[in-house]
Image (tube, rainbow, N blue to C red; front, top):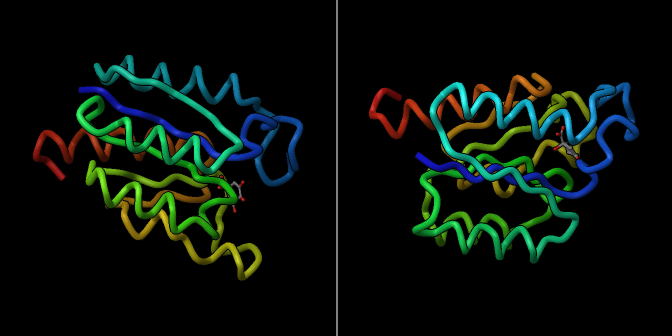
Length: 146
Ligand code: DQA
């Protein structure tokens, strides 16, 4: 089982970026957390981050035939990107959306998620643990348990 874990704009600045909202741990911490969860679950993974919408779209397209599932925190593109939604629909891989913060308790513009419309699971407001929940959900889903 091989998962692609994608992170959108500004998540490379975790630790520095609005620590009251996103915490003090860095992107490197997030990457090693996700890699350790996948290793524990016996899942191969690639964890990537980009600030560019088209790069994220290219990676989703290239995931077809190469990965079994996608976990994605689209960050700010969550609230704007029909292109990411369409890419997820195009490849039709099981996908789960993660947000570190509780987007539903923040500004109204964060309450809409376009990529979320192509995801079978959304986890928000749980910090790094949200990635673990999404990974385990998709693993169970692929094994026919969820
Ligand atoms: C985020 C929430 C988004 O609204 C925001 O633009 C982000 C991060 C989160 O992880 O909580 O960049 O996706």
